[in-house]
Amino acid sequence: MPEQLGLNSAFTTVAVQTDTYTKAVAATGTLTFTGNALNNETVTIDGKVYTFKTALSDVDGQVLIGATAADSIRNLVAAILRGDGQGMFYATSMKQHSTVLAAKTSDTTMVVTAVTPGSGGNSIATTETLTNASWGGGTLAGGITAARFVQFGFRAVAIILRNAGTETIFYSFDGGVTDHGLVLTASERRIEPDQYSSQIHLRRVAGGGATNNVDVMAWG
Image (cartoon, rainbow, N blue to C red; front, side):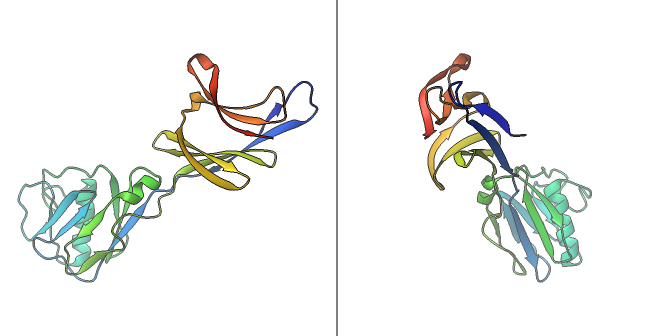
């Protein structure tokens, strides 16, 4: 709900703070097969290598080649998730992938999704040595960092991006955005009216809850 803040007892105007939120979106990537995997061909996701084999050894990363491409995709998905088929579809000693999830979306495609939503997932690298398959891109794509657009009346005060628990402040100057690279936690941030004017301030809060002299942004 919007929060009403009186500018000053000497003023009759009231500033209404409006927060608009953008949800975080996880980055994804698609591996598309035109035929089956071949022995010793690999798929690499964020540094973890999966090696297709005609016969499994108990080595982390080994995935059994299925009778069809659809079967091989099923086995690769199971290996990434460390799901059903341990010791049959993939090596018993396989470790679950730590940064992506995977799903078989058709008999010819597998989609991987970053575990952590946000633009950081767009840097997860995806490569392969497959004769009959390829990734849609060299990294995952489409990840969007959660954002909070803070506004008083018609004046934008800040755009706050949140990724993996860390908030970064971007300041908007009459519609333009300047990246000052300032990182504030929720307890360090305070948006408040100026007691002597009609300005709005975004302040950094020091220990104990008092605002220090870092007056990040003000609007007249």
